[in-house]
Length: 345
Image (cartoon, rainbow, N blue to C red; front, side):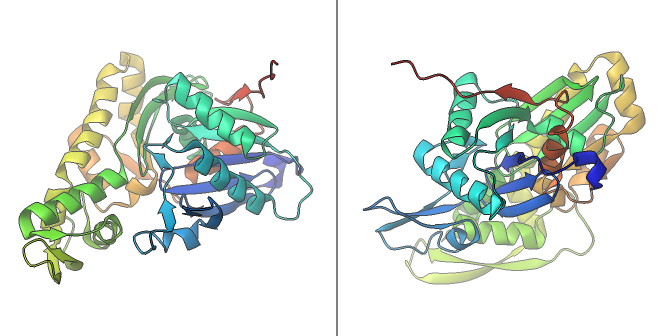
């Protein structure tokens, strides 16, 4: 991004703390970290053994004394202390040797978060080393990152399909005019494949293996030649390891329910939009971001269901973090400052 947009290095970070991945944007430099939101802990001593890429390689392969886990689910913290440690590691790694003791942080959150959940992620970020925390809705950050005219009096629609949540919103005049947040995303698709393999093939497979199949041949719409992919697991009947090959049509059928929920959220948002904003969206179409934008045929499925033009941004996985980074300079665009609370004794 042009340096004139961000100005000099001011020590501010934008963090997209996602269920699947954490992306950190450093003011003046751009994206400086992109790693899985995974941490490995020694269950006996609570020492951190690995974070990010190294920790992900341990999932499902650790002894009883080591726990490799994703401390967020549906964009919400499930383990406060572990999330704090993971976030501290990411912030320190992003800063590196730069002399930034307690950076100000803009943190992306799902619009459907409750007040208690917002407080938890805010406090975890402060405990991880931030001096000040501002929250911005993921949908707004996505719209800014996609270079939509969010500050203008015109409706722009963005759909952010992440690992744990899907954010759908129509922006106008610097805010979210209509929004919808559902706790369905890429991991629900993985879980659906796991259930399908169990019910149809009598095969117990892990989430990582299911995700591999999704990435290889998964689709939301018939696209070109229907390929096959191998999936490995344990046979429920014999208890032995077994390999199976799943076809693209089977995987699409397995993921039908979560994909239908996402499509339903988009259609529901359009139904709630005022006539003027709906007319703007009909003319301009919608923008698709997040990891789910990379699911083959997702854009065609939405195009068929809504009748809208659908555009996938160039970098769907980092779009939210880039948008939050842009909001560091344009503080009026969605970022809500929340300062450290006073400790009363």
